Amino acid sequence: MTSSPSQSTTLSDHQVISSGLDFAGVTRFLQQDAANPETQSLRLSVSSLSALVERTAHVRRTQSSIDTIERQAARLSHQIRQHQLLLTGMGSAWHGLYEFGAYQQAVQSLRQALEGWRETLRRRSSAEPQCFQDFERLAWRTLGEALLVLDLYEQQSTAPQRAAPPSTPPRPSRPTLLARLRAWLGGQRL
Picture 1 (cartoon, helix red, strand yellow):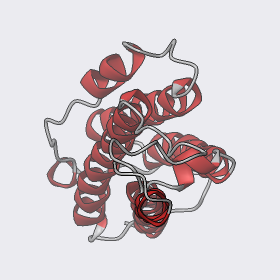
Picture 2 (cartoon, helix red, strand yellow):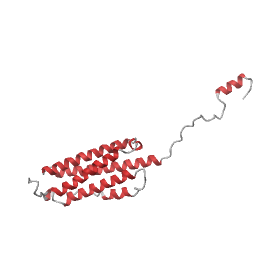
Picture 3 (cartoon, helix red, strand yellow):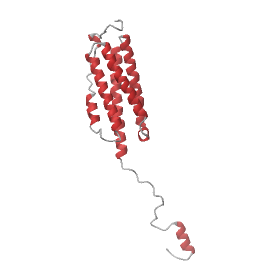
Picture 4 (cartoon, rainbow, N blue to C red):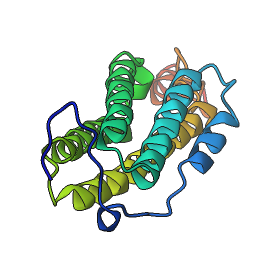
């Protein structure tokens, strides 16, 4: 189904699929503790990302106009780029988490999957439904990774800190070897 860019094109009924996924629940969960200053910026960004994924999936399932779907996908692409910039600027405590690097990679993979899906939309490819399903599955995985990173960071920041070693060693309960040697040499008994 090819047409000029000025004509509105549509997806046929057999191409429109429904996954039944609901990203809105993730968004609501993320907004529960958005006041925590240490996690606020990431929570808000992931929440916005989740809402845009939900909106994009909804538009894809309910709209037949490829142009409308592409515009929504372009908004999501922009949000993912903004989210990646936020991640890059996060503090060292975030970057110190092993899972944070895995999350950054998941966001990059999501962005690549989105761009692959957008390309199939532009080409009006028969592979579009499968690319959309792949993108949507990856979006769930990525949001799950975000929740994991947030949870691990919060556990790390609320875990009781191990006591730092004292600057001077604690006094032993019994005299040191040197003290006992001095006492013995001096004829004093301990």
